Length: 137
Image (cartoon, rainbow, N blue to C red; front, side, top):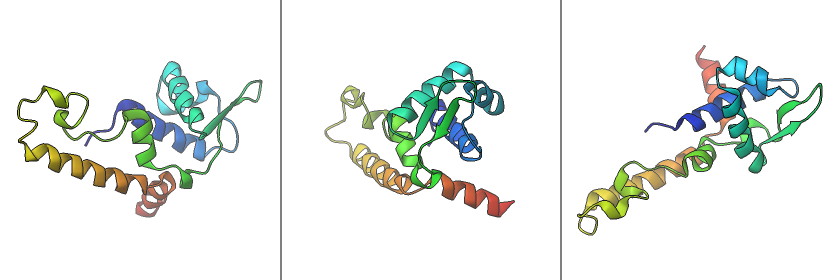
């Protein structure tokens, strides 16, 4: 399974914000993550909509976390940025294209697998990922 660029960018941005002592400017986030200013803004817009980040204007302004990383799951990010997991074209918006749709057990198996994977990822919190990485160093 491959995550979309915006989901990967959201993880990187959230890891940076999680390690920051206060608000971080969009320019600083762009510089430390290597993500364009525009993309940082777009990712922040989605995260703000879901109550994860908040922005402040002014000389000491920037973006900061509203919730700890222990409350943000990889599964949530996948839902927000990728609209869930699709393991194959026949499981997503283009399912009607397949002429074998009614007789194919592969589609049903992939849908069930995607549902289970989504449930697992809903319980994989960003802080858990950081903790696991820190222990392996």
